[in-house]
Image (cartoon, rainbow, N blue to C red; front, side, top):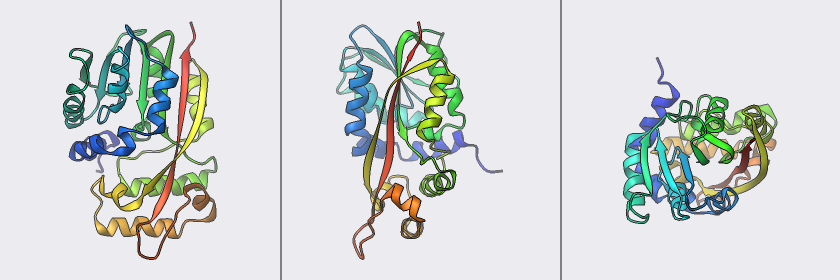
Length: 260
């Protein structure tokens, strides 16, 4: 019997935790800057960062003077995040907790802000995850999410998600913008802000960060070369003769507010 998505996630990210601490895609970039700007955490707030990964979002929130819970399903990832954050955040401002994004161990209306960056495509039940964020944030509080974006055409979305899953078997599904807006509205959140981003990646380091071998990287390159026109328009691959292939991943930032 194949492993369930949560077991795969723990295996994949437990093995490669340090790589996500050092990954420039996760450690910096426009999506992190804009997430913090739009959520605008305040001193004295309580915040929860779900699937904290290397802890970059949690650290950025804590630097605003906000008491922050850095939560992740994967224990080695939490250890890596703690090591990364401890040297840079004031003592006691960040606490660490192993948690499941779809079943948060907190009372309702606990947090002023909840964030999750570049992770929900690993969650088996994204609607349940969004409902949990809405439950634990206080009335008037904000939820900020950054994740991969799929094209609206189902056939093209299937191709793009298959490409992602070949690189990382714990990838479940990336949804399109309309679907994401539906998740937030369905959970009782008012959508305040949406913006999209193009993040460029060199194929080989992107694949190696998840432990892909040469054969898998060759298959990934073939999927870029052979991509049908709608998928090629979405991923914008550049396939030089000898140098590494380059492509884009589309991401979104969505901020919702819990109605008072």
